[in-house]
Amino acid sequence: MALTLENGIYRPDDQPIDPPYDFPAYVGSRLRHPNRPLVLIPQTLTELTGPLLGDGRVTEGDSDLTTQHDGEPLGERIIVHGRVVDSDGRPVRDTLVEVWQANAAGRYRHDVDRHPAPLDPNFSGVGRCLTDDEGRYRFVTVKPGAYPWKNSNNAWRPAHIHFSLFGNAFPQRLVTQMYFPGDPLFGQDPIFNSIPDPKGRERLISALDMDATVPEWALAFHWDIVLRGREATPFETKER
Amino acid sequence: MTIADSAPRPGPRPGRAELLQRTPSQTIGPYFGFALPWADGEYVVPDGTRDAIRLTGRVTDGAGAAIPDALIEIWQAGPDGHFDHPDDPERASGFRGFGRCPTDGDGRFEFVTVKPGRVPGPDRVRQAPHVEVSVFARGLLKRLVTRIYFEDEAEANAEDPILDLVVDPAARATLIASRTADGYRFDIRLQGDGETVFFDF
Image (cartoon, rainbow over all chains, first blue to last red; front, side, top):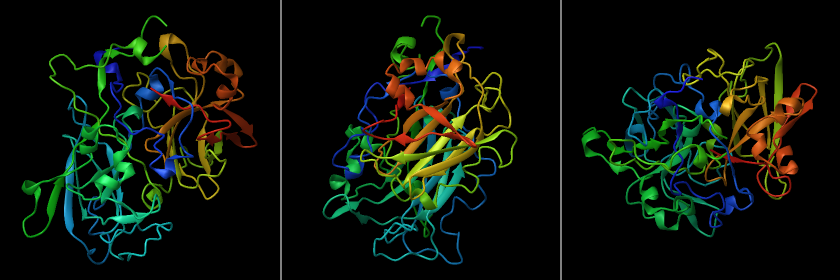
């Protein structure tokens, strides 16, 4: 197998970045976290590759969640945009970004969502796009509402948009949530607070971006996403 | 062998002042079902493809209860042991290799695919045929990754460098799919008795 500098493994974290699997304050994790430690394996060709989706998965209009029905959805119209890069700052191009969210009243268009808030016939809350050559993505949507959930007495989720990204290879796969600045519900949310490092939590909060705002039409929020970067060393070694 | 053995400690690339911190994971939550499933998601190959197999299984929690709100994704080589990806020197162009299936009310998933070939591994040891699996679910704050191996590949499994890292026979058995009439079955237990082996890499 030809080895080049670009064939390095995807860089392991040198400190905990993600939440732990076992986080008792998030009740849903109690019976769903493994008890045994993960087995560390070398990155082989299986891990150094991954699905490159996109062609045929995204159609014109998928990135505008406000124009998918006959009328306009209710709520605060917003633009959500940013760049997808790796931890070396290199753009992740042509990668599929999928988003889903509650409507402005805090209700998902999903059968199991029983929150007694109205559905909006003009809002599905599903979007897709591909990043461009600079790793940029952009969605037009409405700001999702906060909603109650059954984790504990009177628990409410801060407003958030779910993001799913593939990146260039299997280790870059990421499912996460984007939040809005200054949300008063951050302090009581176990999902947000499952991230061990306060700086890590800040990485999930978008920033108001007046420069990207369209005057008289929509506010904008900026959120960059950083996927695992790659070591500059080959992944194969002689000794084992 | 571990990653730490085979690579220097993580650090900045030469000429780079500081690495950007990776964006943390959050749970997929209970409400992805109207957004992420694709009409052709479970078809890694079209139905009716020659040598197609059905890869089925059930996802359960620490109480043995079905998990009806998981999303299973698979990634695999084609029958020739290669991937449709630019970092595979012998790229298998045109083989999607990817499937995505939400679990049903009984925790079940099903893919239509073909059995992968043996994939190049570290130190020129070939890996046994395997399918890489990502598990997302409400209650999982980040994905879990495991691998499906095949029970009728005993010889290849015996020399697989990844299976070799799982010493306990009972744990190792959780990674082996059993033969069914039209494919293989691979159950995923997130916690407790028969807990599936999950990987970090």
